[in-house]
Length: 341
Image (cartoon, rainbow, N blue to C red; front, side, top):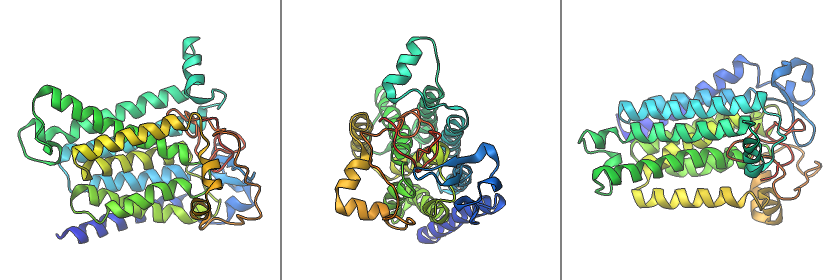
């Protein structure tokens, strides 16, 4: 089966799985724009404009991404590791969506709580993301460990030190991307665009990385209408799983040097979010603002404050340990005012 055909099939499968999950929960209707009583209470959130949105958009997207991970033409260990990492990232995000209170702000806030003996859902999520990255990196490296030439062997690395270094870099890319996409999930469609654009580019490449990226693009295309239409939100569940999937695609597509650069860049952006508001940066740049607003409803009539630094919890909405994406009025929806990042 040719590369382009495989990538197209994976994209369509991810699109179909995401759409099917949304249809099962009736997420494609207009209930999220004015009928909050039709959304089960545990899934009801309010976005940055106070509009009711359905949190089940996140699990729906995660199902499509996991299907894409299971179909990509990679070794069985790599496929299993990718699906496990994406699923674990989604579950950890869902825990924070449903149980996180959003009171701990930023990494310092979460570690301060830990110093007083309190373990926040944000810290649990951070630990799960790190573990998910390691699990994928180890399983993805299995061909190299067994002496089989494969993606993980690129760069001529050998020996225990080289393998450990490679696993560390790959894990950082996956866990970091999961966190970064969540940090960006503060307005409708922003996280989907942030992951979908690079996925569309990577999807042109041959191999398992391109196929995973094509699957991401398909799932994003399915989730975009309801997310941009402010009927659903990704929450931490959807944003974390989306970022983890993008991390998997990057690891499979880039040579070792490229992955090191990606890990450094992602880490730098995460650290910057502790001091700089991504929303304010986007609002202050005409090109980024137009791209951010593309496809959203009533953009110019909306109360869309940029807010002081990212006033969303980086471990809860914007950060490594976070609460529901696009922060909502309850501190958990994916389109709301930002949390302190």
